[in-house]
Image (tube, rainbow, N blue to C red; front, side, top):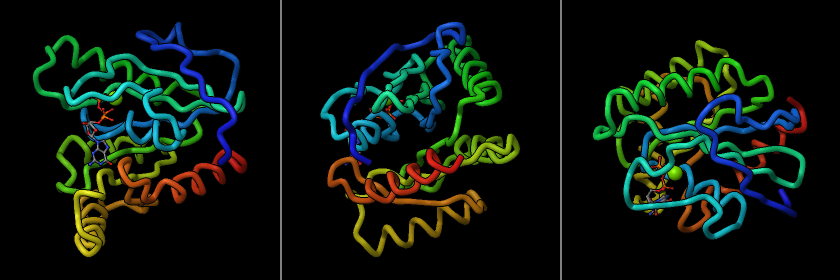
Length: 194
Ligand code: GTP
Ligand code: MG
């Protein structure tokens, strides 16, 4: 994928703010700190278009990035961050649910899990929920630079077993760029043949 333009459009806090021009979307979902914003930056070849922080729970809005005037990448708020208030957590969940069930331009959901740990109960629940919604899912296992090559292979097997999923599974590193071309190849085919 050649990135000719990548523009941060807006951080939405409610559905009324979502762009309404019908461009197709690819959404990124995963727990706080798993590396959603870092993956988006790496995919776009931009250093800090999406805000990355060591403090989990940073991305609270639904952030829309317009790419090549052709499609959008959507950075969804991270789930499972323990210290946010219950009210806020419920608000996130509602927002995610509304987005995933009502967003007709949604072409692909990329669910991120940390390659170093077995998917959490929340990761499994979200994955099952996505499958139940019939949402087309790609699972990305992030931070592969933190493991040896053989540990990456082992971990991918463990992730597939824990999620017990038929979904495509790709290991990535936002540090080294490993797996990024694979993710693009996959998303490209989804954008061109929805
Ligand atoms: P929220 O916005 O809080 O939901 O987090 P996020 O999922 O967007 O995670 P973010 O991209 O902000 O990354 C969280 C932390 O993990 C940052 O310190 C990143 O530098 C680090 N990180 C992300 N991806 C990678 C990776 O592939 N390798 C390594 N080593 N670190 C990573
Ligand atoms: Mg983020």
